[in-house]
Length: 374
Ligand code: BGC
Image (cartoon, rainbow, N blue to C red; front, side, top):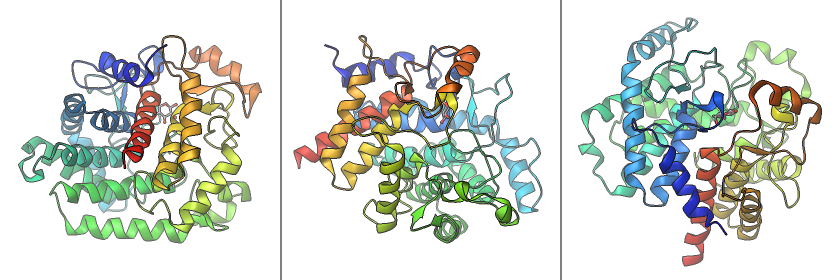
């Protein structure tokens, strides 16, 4: 029997590139890139299991990559300050393992990954007990630039974490930006504007991102609101878990967060199974995502619902193949079965191993162990 925690650590360490980047999946052609979002959660998992050097190397890759593309970031900030469209100048959601821009067209304007990166970096500094004021100067520069970038651009609609729906703002993305701005402060790159923006983002989510007593998947920019159909304004998305865990725009036991989790549970979590991204998902037929099972379990640990977290952990363990590899999603209960084959024909079978799935498994596994020790 494979020891899944050990195997998960091995999968991540084995595939980490010499540059420090983590490929999303080493065997899936379109995932041979390093995403800030996936990488931030993977680095966090590495810190949680004590593999700090792996996390440090990833953060160092991000710092080098962001500074390499700083001109694009500065141009975007200048445009945002003048209220202009961004054109093609912005930081990408993913880069090659050497930190270069990719060749294929990609929905690259996504802000959540950068916020989550800042959050993971602050967690790395905290866990290692480093003095934030002694961070290498290149790290401080990259943190400062990223925080300025997020503070300047947060109100622009962008692609969500599933790389879709660019015409909206997304409470999950906004919570990642909020966490990122707080994290920049925690590592000593404090800036009053950043704090004021974090407060504004917080207010914006609570004012525009709530319907029927729960958070919603997306928010329309004001000029579009009238044209949105009802389903879109009231739907939930499993990533909303991240608004509290880990981004703490709300606490896990806040009634609004609990109402949101209850909606996710009812609409997206199959009894005894995994978790769908959102009801209208058609990517590979809309399967159950392993990383979301880990994420929901992590939320349940923080909300004090251990049993539910245990059940999700067991479900993930049952999805590993004989070598212990975890896929991105499991296709046994598809929301839109007719769409499976078009994706398979385009990109091949579902990505496996997906490093982010292994990371979320590790985070949940350790969170449950820690609670047991208490
Ligand atoms: C997901 C993203 C993810 C990327 C790489 C996409 O299919 O929607 O959230 O970052 O894959 O894993």
